[in-house]
Length: 454
Image 1 (tube, rainbow, N blue to C red):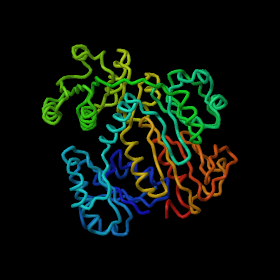
Image 2: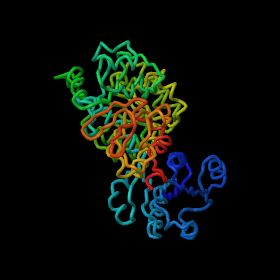
Image 3: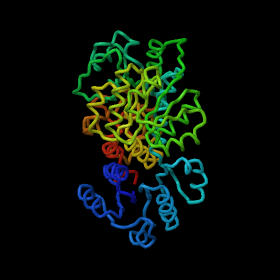
Image 4: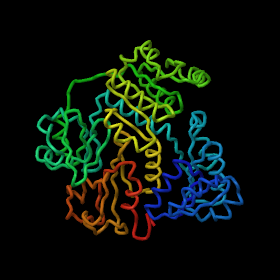
């Protein structure tokens, strides 16, 4: 496909990096000459210096011949206008990043009248993942995800004592014909490779994939019947867009929410737009303020400030105070090992999540279903066609990177737990587990023989 990306910020470049892996023809447009020079020399893309709102520029690059335009500049209004102009000039489809709650409230109107095909909202996406984690955990979600005859089950290892202390490969002898596809260890989701040997701890969460009846049998062993705990108290540090969206969701669920922000004007906005949320003006790193607000009694603490270092500090403080669920928004992959050592329950990168959403949109009907795992990885089920590069190849020949796994294959009515000698066939339904940060390699795996999906 031919794809134009307007805006060479973190998200735009992350999307470009992912798409290059799938053999797309990518054009990046930005009016910052330094940014264009710095990044496009390292990416196999065409770079255009200029304003994406200019009709002349879009005509000059032949935008009418492009399949997609993705507008991810720093302002919603720019993205809306750019998308609308590009659509009128004949581009196939447009995707716009729209973040502000006021715009989101009239999203359908904007999409219809400005001819926008898809909307990206990183802040809403991260809030939805956090809300899902908290609400499903406290409302007895059974943790089973179905994809045809293949299922994935998530459960805490302590519920099956026989596997605690075993490596993930040894656990398969206890669990049966399943694949231990991912392990959440101290808040970090790990997809084990063939050479890895992770010892399972009692507090680890396992994600096992297999045939539906086998998974249902394991579920009956680990389910805690009759247990119900309603989440009641949540504190959110950071009243930006992600914190605002999350507070709205938890408020609708019925939780008691406190949100802290250091900016008085932002607090005034939050107070007028959130009905049953206590808004506190102050520094979330001030322990006196936290103690005054019964910080230690919270069921969950979520840090969504605009600074990774502050989010990590707050997460550490919350963990040391004994709060059960601690979640942090983290934008830098380099903090991964630190997060694992700190024991944060969930760390999410909004750029990775949003880039993954773009990948799913572009892959279209090839993707039958997808399920995000703790905001860090995803389970994708794809329909294999005879034009795909993986068709007719053995798993061992695919050079699957660390952070990715072919977990199961449904071939007509049969479910196959693949090994290195398994060959992918036309018509297979393949379940792949992948770190969100491995979007580039996932695109490479799913491309067609003449370029990703033609």
